[in-house]
Image 1 (cartoon, rainbow, N blue to C red):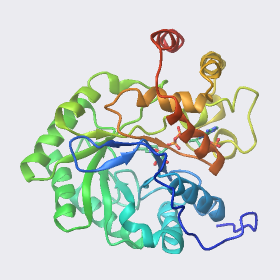
Image 2: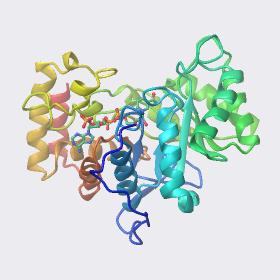
Image 3: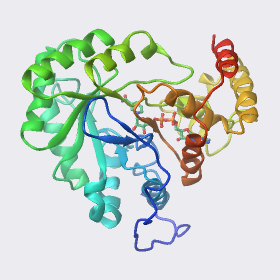
Image 4: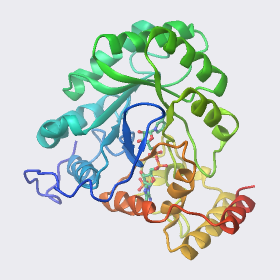
Length: 338
Ligand SMILES: NC(=O)c1ccc[n+]([C@@H]2O[C@H](COP(=O)([O-])OP(=O)(O)OC[C@H]3O[C@@H](n4cnc5c(N)ncnc54)[C@H](OP(=O)(O)O)[C@@H]3O)[C@@H](O)[C@H]2O)c1
């Protein structure tokens, strides 16, 4: 990882006023309140990124009451490096605050070679969590997720592994990601029978990707399970950054692994332009409006953003200043999204 002197390292003491302005929502029917905005480390925390910029992002988050950091075994690049870098920053800055933090990780996507480093077997999930804990230097995570459904492994085995790590004390709560409504109902039932509630679901959800509205959110409410949408800004598309071209430091230009320039079509930009006009009329940035639009539904516990700069996080937190939409605004937005 490149270490710059752009951000001289100082000893960190979290701001005493860190809880003054953040708003929290209960995660389903659990005892846990999550900040309405959480921070994900999918991008910008790998060995190819600037560790000190990552430090500023984490400090900004916590200083503003963001108590939830989301990781996965394969975040980087390379795989595992986001957990390693988080572990280092945790040790240097956040260890005294461990009991104020909700740290999550996941297993489900390709992680190591061979048949046991992917998907949803008990062998993979349990080994992967042990590796994640080592990389992060933690004794336990707060939430451990099955990162994706595995059509070939019995759901009883995958959910049994989640229950097992809770029994072991290696995770306090469990979650699933990208499971459809039907599989979510089955997973919740298996877990409930084992005695471990399904705490949270992490689905992809944004103004441009609304599959969860077709049954999943209803199912989660029924189960008493929280939800935390990922890629709420469509990896940056739902901001004003691509309206004047392709900034050199943007994800679509500098990364391109999961978000490519050719995904930013003129048709999408036209919608972004119109949405941006509504955001301006609401006195918000488009990023803020995209976050607020998700949080208008109380079934959304927290919105999981990624940021490449601390300033972006501050911008996104500003969404909480205006979460209300008039009927007219919602109708206009619907018309653009149709
Ligand atoms: N469960 C899963 O399968 C899964 C999959 C994907 C992600 N996730 C989780 O969800 C988290 C968020 O995903 P994501 O990074 O795709 O989220 P996102 O919030 O949709 O996109 C983040 C990117 O948007 C840009 N951005 C953010 N705030 C901005 C602002 N205020 N103004 C302008 N640009 C802004 C930045 O891009 P630039 O780099 O261009 O500045 C940033 O890196 C991940 O870190 C991960 O924890 C989970």
